[in-house]
Amino acid sequence: MYARPISCNLSGPVLAALPSSVPPTIVLAVSGSIAAYKAVEVARLLKKAGARVIPLLTRSAREFVGAQTLAGITGEPVHEEMFDPGYPGEKHVELGRTADLVLIVPATADLLARIAAGRADDLLTALVLCARGPVLAAPAMHPRMWGHPATQRNVATLAADGRVSLIGPVEGEVASGERGMGRMADPAEIAHAALAAVETRDLAGIRIVVTAGPTVEDLDPVRFLGNRSTGKMGFAVAERAASRGASVTLVAGPVALATPRGVTRVDVRGALAMKEALWEAMGPDLGRADALIMSAAVADYRPAEQSATKRKRSAEALEIKLIPNPDLLAEVGAARTGTRPVLVGFAVETADDAGIVAYARGKLQAKRVDMVVANHAQDSFGREDNRATIVTANDAEALGVMSKRDLADRILDRVAQRCR
Ligand code: CTP
Image (cartoon, rainbow, N blue to C red):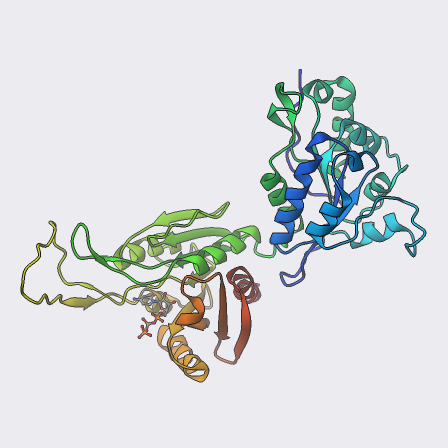
């Protein structure tokens, strides 16, 4: 009988918390299996996510994947030999000290056996013994090899030692065309597990409500008033908050974005529906949330009347009466009695830099919030990056152009400080 794969338990020896601004360093070690080519995709995904990736090839891995490919993707020299005349010092010790994670993709049956036995007869096995951080391995082999008692004994030893975690293998087709347990986990799953292993969990235990996207105000069953918000900023905040360990509820207007992993999403259309979902998430006394990050572009007005049927065209000019929507953030600000929940507003303006800070300060006071993230409409809407100023009662930190993901981290760094 095949043993179940070990789930990804990364309670490993030392998992240093990385400040979000410091990119993690991952040693990506490739051993000799046909699945080795998929390590290139893992390297690409890790680089894309902002990690520094140091490639390592075992001797047999060189039969399957070229050092040039890995060097090209990672921008780092490839380490292959334990004894390297050109390298000052002990390579396995130095890599073990540098790596926030040693990631082995793929891990062969032979490699698992050697690690389980505590061998140190090549660079990778010596590095595994010397690593200060966690080690995560993605086994790949023929199902009969995985199911063999010797392999299962080695897997059980690794689990008992608690120093090497496995992701996969999974059930599926293997290189020979046969099916069974032994196929390597999907590269995206491996990259996600690797990033989760090096992620700082500074928001663990913190409950964050995020609003994102536009609200749209229906005129009739086919027409609405809306705005240009795409929701990217709020979704980035929700994704980063969840990755950093927060429990996140995302109240989203109509947007075409996938729900970030681990996030509870509530979809709404209009401002009144967003208000209802927001208070449901925060609780009537605001006790269900430690922070609210209000990035939604809530419509300030809605049509006084909604037609139940489609309005017909006429030759006359059409006047539509709009009535004000409630200010959702200001209502929460007015209801808050102490310092919790931490309240973060956004202000998208068309003024100059000094003007947007002045508007943001006004909103800070009027809505009784802790900080306002101010930006220019042209720097923000629909873009992948943003240029913002974080305005609080005491300061205004002008940030340069950065990805929405990085801006989300900067906002969350401040939320984390206030939640301590
Ligand atoms: N906001 C809100 N409810 C509204 C309008 C805005 O909760 N009806 C929130 C937004 O989510 C944002 C902040 O208030 O966090 C500022 O939004 P913004 O549209 O810039 O400000 P307004 O108060 O609407 O002021 P103006 O449109 O006049 O600049």
